[in-house]
Image (cartoon, rainbow, N blue to C red; front, side):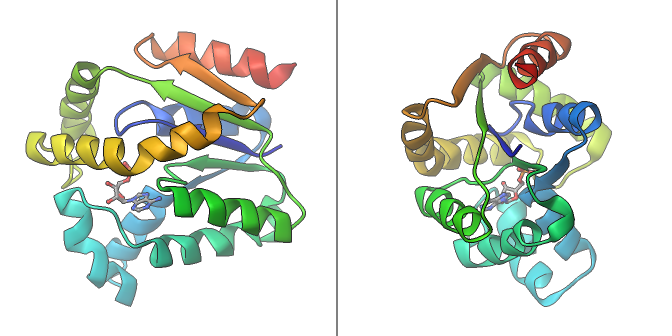
Length: 187
Ligand code: AMP
């Protein structure tokens, strides 16, 4: 099966994706991790996007779509994908549909982690201490939230009409959220 975990920054997408990977033997694709890797390795893409990520802006669709394509067409990932942080715009969502079609795959479950803005701020402030990400400061958090609301909200409208869309209370405890997701995936 292929799964999308969707929601604002700090919603817990990475944490939940990580948990599902372990329980259901899937492969997590985090575009944020893929992009941070490019920055860490100082590739051509990495040098271009370093500033963009630090400011809380989005990398271009062109860059992200190319990174995603490699993962989708990798035979070892086929029908084992969890998308974490992708798609983040309507054009990315359409690109994803097209890439999955071309590789004879589809999305089986879409989870939307719905979280209040205050919860996000508290969570990211905590994560900052643990992960030391350059984009985890209050100004950037607020910017990332606004970018999410502007660009990613249309993706939510697009997916929420689908039969395999599940909205989850992302303010709940991590274990509780995991249990709900596992229940749905196990049916
Ligand atoms: P994340 O780890 O998902 O919070 O992503 C961290 C940052 O990477 C985001 O704030 C964006 O700057 C960039 N990023 C991650 N995924 C995408 C995407 N699908 N499209 C554009 N930029 C992205």
